[in-house]
Amino acid sequence: MKVRIVNKSAHPLPSYATPQSAGVDLRANLETPVTIGPLERTLVPTGLFIALPAGYEAQVRPRSGLAAKHGITVLNTPGTIDADYRGEIKVILVNLSNEPFEIVPGERIAQMVIARHETAEWEEVESLDSTERGAGGFGSTGR
Image 1 (cartoon, rainbow, N blue to C red):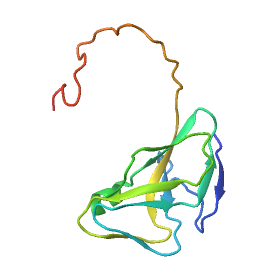
Image 2 (tube, rainbow, N blue to C red):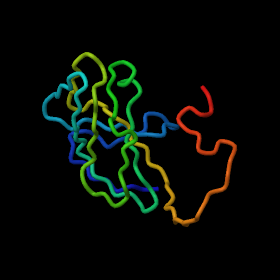
Image 3 (cartoon, rainbow, N blue to C red):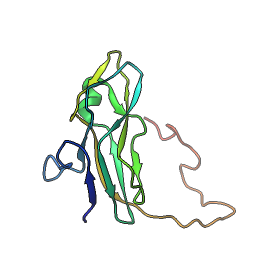
């Protein structure tokens, strides 16, 4: 599958770190560093614009190293980029730590996974079939 991409950043195109990587790293397209204070959030541009084929989405996810080491994560994870979106890919980062965190130009800030998706056709009914779980949720199946 080919994805058309416009790169208005000063950085190379996203690439897969290993042959079996699911996602590509997204980099901060900044002219100067940006600091995110504790519990603050910011929208970080990437300088990338994509055109996905119909039936695909791009999911923006946190980088595990930033999350584990610094408490930096993607606020609306996974963020979805629809196939018909043509604007710049931006990443909503939040600092969940107690320390300020500086994002430097070109830093890898998130990862993006391209995935197929289905479009549901709704069938309205009066009731649903019963299951063992039923309406139980949020921990109802145990720890």
